[in-house]
Image (cartoon, rainbow, N blue to C red; front, side, top):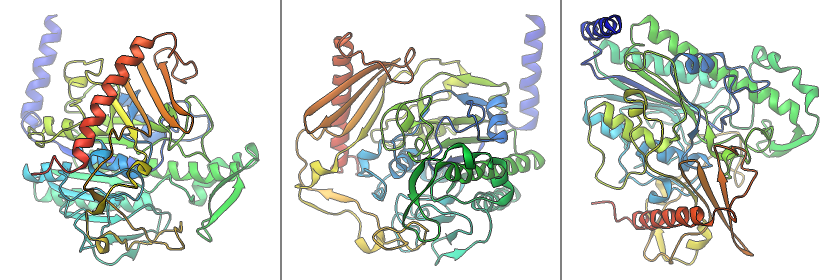
Length: 497
């Protein structure tokens, strides 16, 4: 015991001498695009190589059950930035923007003296200069960003200027920009927030020759054809799944390598100890690339395969020893956690996430609040009187991408102000997780279908317990309904001053 006390005292003294006990941490928050839970080496994937993410999992804090806030990208990104469920701000699906009145992590940290930068995919509005939703309008000091996703040689907008082409592998391009930003903040002795949202591994896929070569065996392993986007035409195409997986996994490996370059730079410049580095995905694996295990469902579903993603934190000054946590965490938890560790107040409005710092500070082992998921059925809102929340001209994107939509390479966003919302506005696929139980509800043409799972015994969601545990299902249903009414209140704009 005496020896342990001496070690703890010595560690505290060293931290104080180095300044880590009093300095505000630097923060880097990274996210992959369509990167599901199982697509990492540390989670046992049979093919994909992710040595850097594996090292982060081995040396830092690994969340075994980390969730995207929604089964699709734009809504999850809104939850990531605000700590709130995306339905509160009308970000219902890809292409539905946020609202300018939302308070982001960047806005919070800018008030705390941080310099904030965004690099990569944005997809909660347009990134052009005259948009009220570009990263600069939402709290970031600088940005090199895209309205949506991108492949090799991406077109990106710097601080809202017309897009320009950057030649090279997109993940490496973003990391080099992040390193430049980090170095400028280090030279000015200013704490920083860098949000890095990769375009990988979203389809259509492309990879460098050296990365593709790692997965040549896949060319004959999965001969069945799958549907995705053609890199040549931007239109739908069918290709052998093995060819698709080879390119997808090459993108993941390139992204992993770029993250390693950033980690090495932090170490070489003395920033690693007091920099919180986070990585997650924005939703589960997309359908054309999923291998069907170990979880049920894919992207765009609220089963575990649609919402479970990698979740990793490294912060040696605060998390000096490797740790795996079974606490269920979600992208909405980022803002409350960052507010806590930087001693900033939460925004004065409903926040759905929780502070995760007790996981490493006090050993919290159970999430104290339920998790809610809701793919709101926008058909419910079709008859509601509505006007655009944002000038439609602001919502027209400028950064081109390969995948065409309505014949165009650019994206247009939408968000609406509703004068009336039908009661009870509770339909669409939805779920609540409390403890180990998960209630899943779908509204079909034939009526409501409900499923109850015990995730501790049945992580694959294969056994419906709804008839065996009706009381548990009823309790979870009531929690879900109460929360949905709160979201409905937010959707009409009641949270904004």
